[in-house]
Image (tube, rainbow, N blue to C red; front, side, top):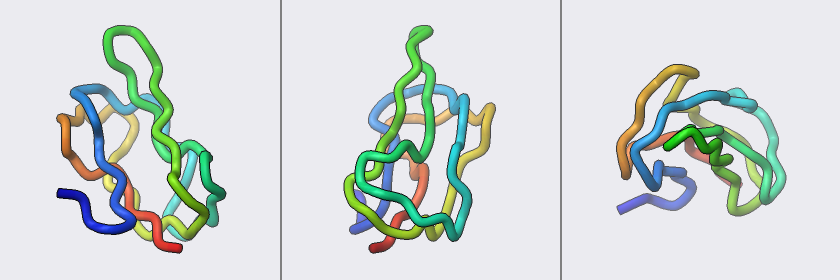
Length: 74
């Protein structure tokens, strides 16, 4: 179960982009990570405004359902 502020993968995918860095301020709906699954790019968006406290993945990483992608506090 995800803790408050944790952003987790909802599917098996590969990380193709990480447009934020730790310490960045983000608005609700802004992309944190871009995943690729079945040749489709899926942006993972912030639920609310806050500050990126942790980025747990890098471009090229493979993630599974439930893996931690980032933590946003706000």
